[in-house]
Length: 230
Image (cartoon, rainbow, N blue to C red; front, side, top):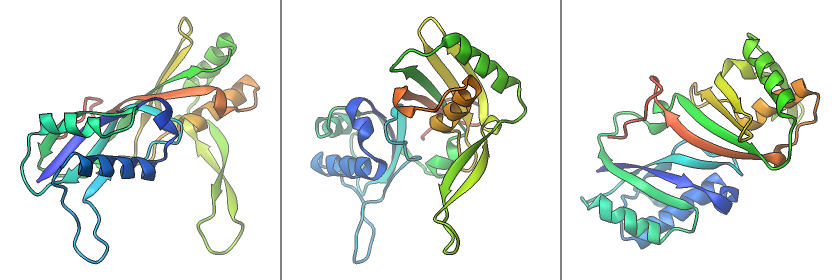
């Protein structure tokens, strides 16, 4: 039986990476007594997958999990049992049985984010940079990536068009909060650090990701609606 669920990852647990988060969830499932299905073979592993990996340091109100169980259980009670075994910051709030017609990551077409700032920024300059970016058909930043080819340098420099994935964005100057929506195409989306590298460049500032507090608000389907997990 296939089960899908939603959980949030808030607070200091944002500093725990994707693979370790998966291990924490698997451990909680086992301690909560969920009849998880394991793969066959010598190195058995639970049939469980999370949606796209969350960048280190980013909090989220909506992450997805996909797993199999070998007997039917009360999912409402399971949520309470799972949460009692999880560390502060990770909380499940929805589980449902699913036909699993398509991989979860393929259902995600848009992501919404909110960004706040740990130190003061010139909101007028940021607002002007946002206007310039939105009025541009394209805006390229330089990005250093690991060279996956065996030959050549270890790192290579590429150009990334941050405008192509940016659906919309706006600045709430009163609350000093920045909101943006990114298109997701084949699991590729506009990361907050790439977006702000471009905005800081337009403001004439050196990019410093340590001043950004990032929260993923939601993940949406192709119609920009809540994703159905059933």
